[in-house]
Length: 109
Image (tube, rainbow, N blue to C red):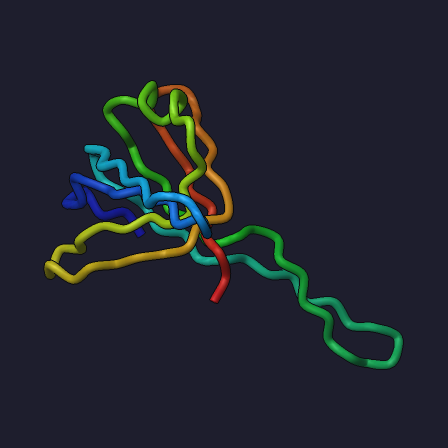
């Protein structure tokens, strides 16, 4: 679901024994994607679920150079939603694409 009202995201790093790091990035909206799964049926009839795509947040950022130059690995992403509620997620990975687009893969709950 695309939300053009989100104008800033915060990346944080929480690593044991290291100082917490924070970076605020201005963006032109975000899109949240739910995880996608594929269910297969085993020979005994049991259902086996495989993750096809992890949940993610895609941000249209103004400056991806700042992200590409990071010397640390973010573990969390957060933002304030349109109601002013703090939304925070644990991250798996970050992919920077051309045209100022960044995909943040999230941990599954």
